Image (cartoon, rainbow, N blue to C red; front, side):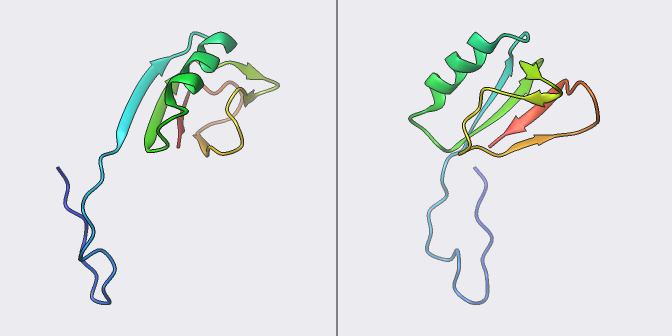
Length: 84
């Protein structure tokens, strides 16, 4: 397990490492798949989602609430994204 970096001005010295979960999901362009994923992760906010083939409308990935950050690369159809 990774150990947090120590800072000179206190910071992370006394903090315990926290576990982060990562999910990799192929959504197959289905809005229902996004709804199922959101239901599964709604209880734990320390999850990084790596998604492929997301449901898109007018070039934007949809289905994730505003409480999540979406990172995509490229123009036009976006085949993959990271949701935090």
